Image (cartoon, rainbow, N blue to C red; front, top):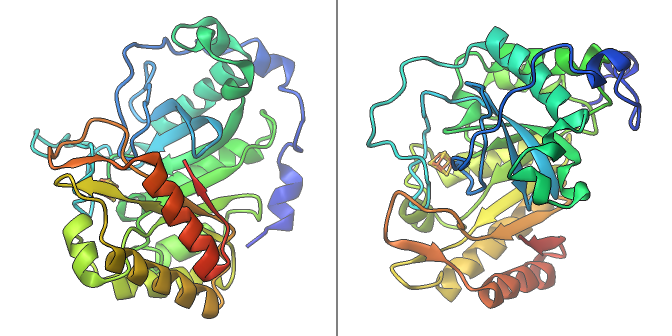
Length: 314
Ligand code: SF4
């Protein structure tokens, strides 16, 4: 839902970074290489931060600044393709919102002042890939079960509302299970129409979901949450299809998935885009692999043909 009052308090799109920000009044973080990896398969670089990272992401179409909402790696899914290694001891400390906020500010300075373009490995990339596309609420688990989700969203919105930076889009990446939690529903009202919610939907049946996502939630709940939210604001669907034990998804699994997309649309969910992709980063589970581009393209083609939704392969 848009919030006109808040919109008026933020910097307009295209606004230049103020002198104070562009000259980096806070010490810019140092990049570390090689970059670590993310839950969604894109390289991340935490610089000198604990909670805020940068990544160049295909689905972001460029540079994403991310907030790791789950440094404790808590997730109610256990996806077979997840690259978060939960066999290692879990960090005990959850997200510290005040530290995250300070990190977000200095990382935005680092990115928007152009300092990032001078640093390896970014100095070899085309300038358009280093333009900030959004600030993502994502991480090593499911953001909506972050214990201080509300404080974190408020804090990111506050960094934007202070107007020290050009307007940036906020994107929540979620598996959809917590979208009906009252604190989450309330927090999402802080977002503007420019912000986006990306919801994971990899399966069209509980059996396939149990095989791929191994969730502590039902497909029915995820679908209901997508409909509930999607009737009020657009929801981008993220669908990851892995090669499982050397096999692509069976035709009937894709068929059921297409039916669920069709039902979501028929129920009134606004779905501007279905992102189709496959894991690209090293995964914790060896039985997973990357689907050939041809298979992904064929799935996207079927989505367009059967549902009329816009689908792209990433
Ligand atoms: S939803 Fe799946 S891929 Fe994302 S963090 Fe949880 S287990 Fe990993």
